[in-house]
Image (tube, rainbow, N blue to C red):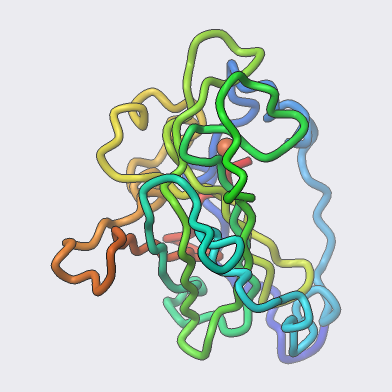
Length: 238
Ligand code: FE
């Protein structure tokens, strides 16, 4: 390890901030989580740094899921989701790639595995990507996703949620998580959200809705910060 990277330069992870996996009734967590304790090896500069410019991953319009083409608007409640990517000390993480994916307003994904009997929207794909600016800020236009029943798992429904990924600041640092909408009655029954033991950590997965008078356009505004590590780390969700 290089001299300028002390061995204990990060706060230790708190287990109660992360969901207890596998999550009963959610078959995906069996496939998406290791069933053995992680093997720890020291990080070197290769793992702790990354390319300076992840920009080639981006294309114009990638952060606008609501408009697939000029004059074509997705069906659903238009929303703006913005926030900051922060490190464990509240400092902005610049140049990180933030990606999101979500169901359409009817709760259906544009994915061959989603064969549920709910309508697809020809004007909604459901994937977006952007990069944080100098303040660590990101923003997306999209629509509020619908709830959907979880297949193969009995009768429970996912509340409206947006899947998010942060890639950066290094190539190997990646957070995959989900954003929830405050006040949805299904939140109390969501097995993923409630697999996170710590109440403050669960609350950190809720976006904050802005008062409509503070939002400049004809959409609802939500603010959601993502914290990569430390005491206030955003929980990782599959
Ligand atoms: Fe989902």
